[in-house]
Length: 264
Ligand code: SAH
Image (tube, rainbow, N blue to C red):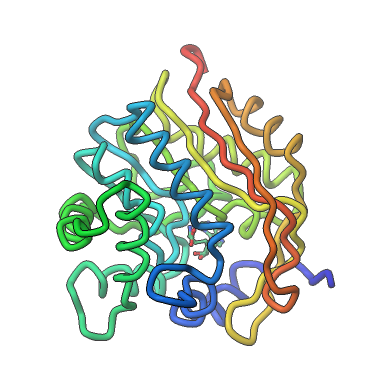
């Protein structure tokens, strides 16, 4: 079932971080996330990029972090500094709660244990949480529709920019998507990396009782946008999703690692 584009105002009003987390980050038992098809795929590919391929450096910027930390659990082993960003104040506040160990913060323990288990050391989860808390140095506002998504701040181009499931939520059509990809890509230094995960063939996803639109993407559209933004795709993988149609109509998830061309 399609849904009209939910723009910035809808996000401000209806995107409740706890609803998002409770719905998308649930665990069906201590060891198995309800959406294991997505999380095993994304976390394993992040591990490959950061721990096997050796992509690392001083700074990683995560664009559209939302209230989530799962996507940074391997990155914190490879970067000295992580910059978290999101369009919404309520998401940035949720992130700050976790960083400060606020009792009201979402409990990420199961996900952190799961990620550590995939890395081969489930016992390591407390050290992992601390390592990530230390690595996240800033939580900034961003808007991927701006030429400089971090405006008014101008940051030094980063070694790596990561983004999971943000652009397809933020963009109303393909021209906006392609320009958002260029905007996000502009934050990467020459020869630096752009790593992202996107859902394809999705038109909506739920956050609590609210339906949010998703831009319908195909793998070709995603690949072309990355190349147009001045990147060479090093590798990409796809996997199919089997979520309840009450939560999303997403078909597949694509994961991509790209490198900025020298002159781009
Ligand atoms: N990366 C997170 C969140 C994905 S949900 C995860 O993997 O769980 C989509 C996110 O896109 C939300 O946090 C929302 O606030 C953010 N978003 C929506 N419009 C945006 C915009 N114009 N610029 C940046 N982020 C935006």
